[in-house]
Image (cartoon, rainbow, N blue to C red; front, side):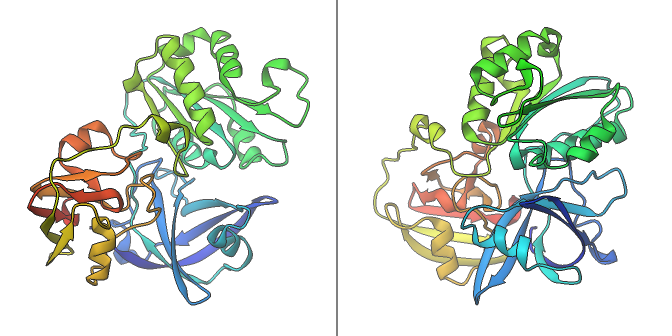
Length: 353
């Protein structure tokens, strides 16, 4: 069950001029709670100007290296929380942090294989956790990274990445505002660039899995190219940091024949509360919070899985879903921030997530 824990900030590192990484000390009693798989994220709860703010940030540490759990936060223009973390947070501060979550993961094994990743900007954060996990825990495996940035100086983790580049880690730094001396590594990772990179490394199409994280346009351009070149969709994994625009235009919206008011029972932390909820009104997360349910949430934009819950009775539909897999939806999971009742009686269990 996800809940907040008070963690001490033990290190802050300037990764670039606009990005810091923050490491946390995990109390002995919370060690198991903060076990994680590479690619997962932490949700932070901060008090800023008297208001509670929540944001999710991917971990960039490896669960196998013994290093402290660490997140990276890039400053966003007018971003309330990212600017606060970059400017205000200091070593010794206590921050409320939820246990690790997320399904954009890489689980290591003894099997020897090759992985490929495309990342841009702060999208490197979960990818770097995956790469280090493979290097730490899969002795026979290799990783190939295509990493897009504006310049060398704006490249998050550049020195650390370059120090580990070798027989098992191959890195292509793609720069859009700095000359690299090689046309294949100049520019942005668009469809043409992704096609050029993959066609010059055709053996990579046989890789075990392909991971992508960064701007929406890059992700879907690369995904299209991979599928055009014959890579099956079940080998392609991606994570979005913001609510998508391109995908939203194509996404089918769930519909229901149910109209009216439903009886909704919400279960969270082994407590139950029941309330009425209109099928065309607010989503179940908003309604639950109005009834003093301290339900987990972060983005409220269908991108993260923090508010994931399971419908154990009745039916709910979602306005949007960019985080749950088809398998999870088939099993009855919904994003509470997008879910509305589609039957007269509904039971929604956060403890089953």
